[in-house]
Amino acid sequence: MTDDEILFGLALTVVLATGSQVLAGKLRVPALIVLLPAGFTAGALTDVVHPDKLMGANFSSLVSLAVAVILYDAGLGLNLRNLTGRTRWIVGRLLVFGVLVTFLVTGAVGPAMFDMPLRVAAMLGMILVVSGPTVVGPLLDYVRPNDKVRRILIWEGTLTDPIGGILGALTFHAIATSHRVDIGRGYQLGQFGISLAVGLIGGAVGAALLWWTLRVLRLGETLGTLAQLATVIAVSAGCDIVRDDTGLIAAIVTGLAVTNIRGFDMPARRPFFETLVQLIIGLLFVSISTTVTPSSLVPVLLPALGLIAILVLVVRPLVAFAATAQSGLTTGERAFIGWMAPRGIVAAATASAFSASLVDRGESGAARILPVTFLVIVGTVLLYALTAAPVARRLAVVKPSGTRVLLVGGEPWVVDMGRSLRTAGLDVLMWAGLDEERQRIKDAGIQLARGDLLATATNPGARLEGVTAVFLATDDDDFNALASVVMQDNVEGPVYRVGPPHESHGVVAPYTGGAILFGSSLVRHALAARYEAGARFLVQSASTPVPADHDTLFVVRADRRLEPVTGDEPVTPQEGDSVVLLGSAPFTQ
Image (cartoon, rainbow, N blue to C red; front, side, top):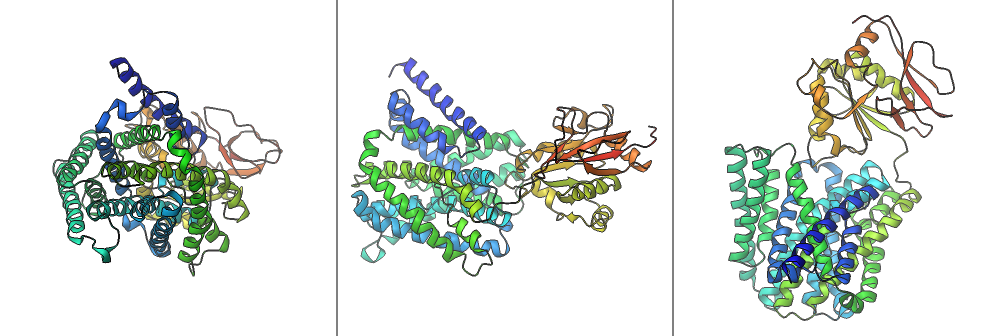
């Protein structure tokens, strides 16, 4: 290829990777629905985006390092201390049964369906056990199942990434070192143990390096991100040099150690690292999909559709109903869990890495692993994306429509506002830091959030389950401003804050963006002063004329959606809506 063709190919790959994820975000669908077809189409129509021509023989090594970064990031999201109670029991059973049944069934039908040896079918089966939160999460955001079901599926999807990656790497070594997967027929336990030990040692070294850089050196967000990236790549590459494909094990172990060992000083947010991982995901899967040619898909298309039917209609329902037996879940909840197992990012990445290595080793049928995985990913994601919402409605596991408000603050006027929102028919949850304020919320009969909720809300790996809007109304304007920024990505809906008094107050509040409640006139101190002077909140039908000297604060739609009044856009009540007003009273600043 000429220099111009290489530049054009690299630029086109970046544009496709970024544009596909932007489009997927706007459509609220998993990015793989757009990424893989975009790469496949570009690979079929042009030669400039083929990674074997852009990077030559180095592509497989780059894929291995990219997968290591992705799996490290997946490991960072696995704080096992947050998996508690009955959810842990259900998720554990789903993982055990899911891995075993998927592996055994795929390994059993693979040789006949795809004309491949048992050991290669076993590799395919282990690749297909993974799902992933990057696929499950957007689907659940669209479907909106109840919190219990969502929690189980998110944890299962998150845990299958590193578990599947580890088991995939171990299965690969079992095949590569002995050409068998049967211990009783000469499986080389010594070789297997060496590979596992190299990966574990690499993970320990990676954790020690990150302890030194993040804990001892106290690197900030930017340098801390660079340190994580450099450590993961160096440890993964070093392990692969010592022993092929042990770097994936090291990357996962490093991520798990950083998250679960107490004392690590991880940044509260990792926007640079998260952005880098998203870019790697896009580049990786556009590149992988370009290597899947129409000629490689045709021979496996019909058998792959048969495998999809087996996985969707037999394997997943069997696993779900066995794992959730005597769990206390309703029949509808158990059935919906049995209808949600899309394959995702780690499946595609490990298929690309392991199949290429097996092909290089001359394994018969290994070239079919990637196209089969590609079809299973696209097929399962499309199937669940099209059917999950109507299935959830039919099984009655969809959350009731309407807004669930998290109101942060404990002053008397804030608690009274929360009581008014509840009177208007909304589900209101409140949080406050001081014991006096928390007692005031309890006395008002409003549900009080647990004490660590705000710590959860500012954790980049967490999510406020069920909360669809946050109103920050504490008496600390800087806290409201900062919390509105860090909570944006962890809530299904918008985050609002009351306005600061004026530009001379607060360190960051006047200079921070975010939606401001009630416009510029009804700022925090004005609301508190008017309430102390006797003003009160009033809930009435939108068809009733607004009394004189009353301000409209919220419009509650007929379907219980809440729209606050802000300074950005006017909110017009419709027939059947309710409004929350603040009565006027004499006020002097």
